[in-house]
Image 1 (cartoon, rainbow, N blue to C red):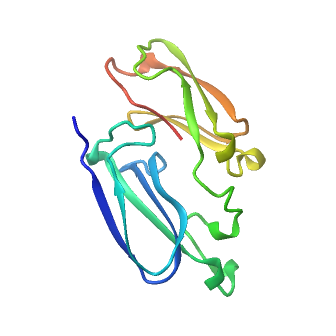
Image 2: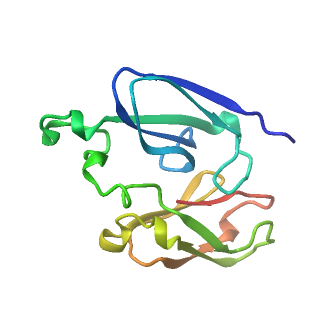
Image 3: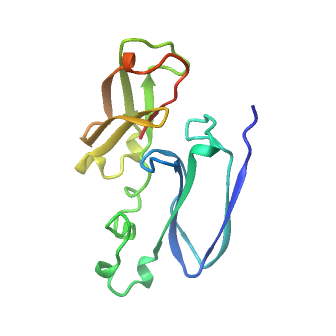
Length: 180
C-alpha cells in the first residue's frame, strides 16, 4: 500500500523558531516523527512535506495522527526572555541548540516483524549525538503498543536501557511497538 504525501503550508508573521511534529491524535506525547526541530526561520510563508511515515519508515494511520506546530520568537527579538510563556514552560531558545533537540532513540530488540509471546524484553539505546540534556537530567521514556501507553519512566539516565513487557495482556495479531 502506497502512503500518501501531505504538504503543510504555514505563515510566520515574525521571525521564529519552529518545531513541527507528527503525533498520535489522542496521545500527543507519542511522537511519530519530527519534521522540523526548532529551526530558525524569517517571517514569511513556508511549506513542509510529510511522506506519511514515522521516524522508522513505518506507515502511520492518517486517522490517528495530528500535526503539532510550535513556534517561539527568536531570542534576539526578545527584550526580557524571562517574561515569555510557552506551552512547555520554558523558552527553547535559551538552551544550547546542540542539546535542545529531538532525542535519537532506537529499539535494538525485539527485531522488526518478530513473533512475541509471554514476557519480552525491549532493549533500546539513544544516539550519543542526540541525547539532549538527558546525560545531565535524565530522559522521559515511554513505550507504546498500538498507541497505548504501557510504560513510562521520567528519569532514565543511561544511553542503553531495557524494559520487560507482559504480552499476555495484549491480543493476538500484528502490533506496532513505539518508544519515545
